[in-house]
Amino acid sequence: MANDECRMTNQCRMANDEGETRLSACASSLSSFVIPSFVIRHWAAPVIRSFVIRYWVALALVLLAAPALAAEPRLDRKARDVFFQSGAGQAEAGKLGVKFWIALRRGETRQDVQPTHAFETGDLIRLRFQLNRDAFAYVFHEGTTGKRRLLFPNPRGNAEERLTRNATYTVPLGSAYLQFDEHKGVEKLYLIVSAKPVQDLERLIRPETPSRPPDTPPTPTPAPKLPTDLTPEENAVLKQLLDQSLPRTQRDVVFHPETAPTGAQATYAADTGANAEEPIVLEIRLEHK
Image (tube, rainbow, N blue to C red; front, side, top):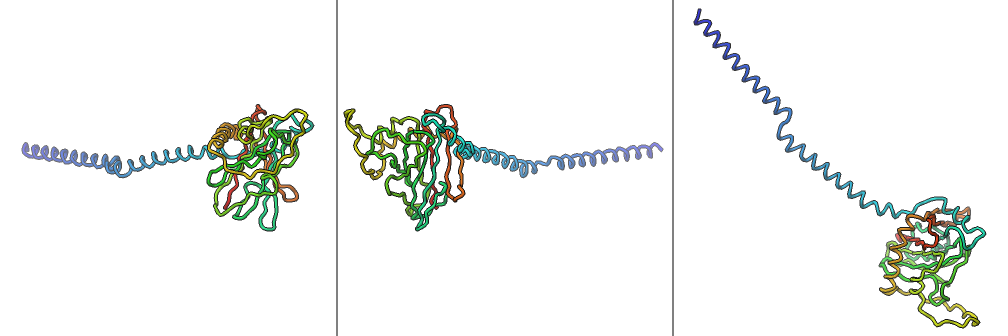
C-alpha cells in the first residue's frame, strides 16, 4: 500500500512537472507570437523609416512651394473699382491703378490678349497701358537669356516726363514690335509706376544735360532710341529697385483680368497699400511655348 501511494505520488509529481513544462512552453510560444523580434526588425523599423522620410519630404515640398504661392498675383475685382474710382475728378489724388494688355499680331490677325496667352515663335507684340492718375512709368524687358533693356520712356526725351491719366501708351515706342524668336521660355516686362519720378531710374536712363534758360522753348522730342542691353552697373541699379519693390507689390497690389464684350482683354492692377508714394512694379510674364 505504501509502495502504491509512493508510485501515485511520483506519478502526480511527474504529471505536475510535465504540465508546468507544457505551460512554460505555451507561454514562451505566446510571448513569441505577441512580440516576435523578427517583426520589429523586418516590419516595424521600415515602417518607421518610411514615415520619417515621408514627413521630411512633405515638409520640403511645402517650403519649396511657399515662394511660388507667394508670387502668384492676388485676384480681386477691387482692382477694377480702384482704377475707376480713385482717379475720378482728381488727377493727383487717390490710389494708383493701371490697366494693361498685350496687343498681339500673328500673321494677319490682330487682337488684344492677356499676358497669360500662349505665345508662339514669330508673334509680334506690344504692351499697352493706361494710368488712373498722372504719374511716371518705366518699362524694361528681360529676355530668356536674362539680359535686360529699357523700352520706355524714350532715353532721348525730356527728363521726368509725367504721363497723363486715361491716355493710352504703347511700348515699344514708334512703330516697333517685340518679336518672339525661336528661343522658347518666359520673357518678362517690368512695368514700374510711381506717383513721383524714381530718381535712380531717371539717372540711369537720362544722362545729365545742361540746363536750359527759362524762356527757351522746349526742343522737340527726338526719335526713339533703339533699345540696348543694360550695362552691369545699370542692371545692378534696376535689380536693387526690383528687389525692394516686388515684395511690396505682391503684398499690396491686386489684379483683375477682364474680357470686354468685343472680345478685347485687359488686366487691371491697383495699389491697395497705405503708402501711395512708393512705386509699384508689375512683373508681366509672357510664356513662349
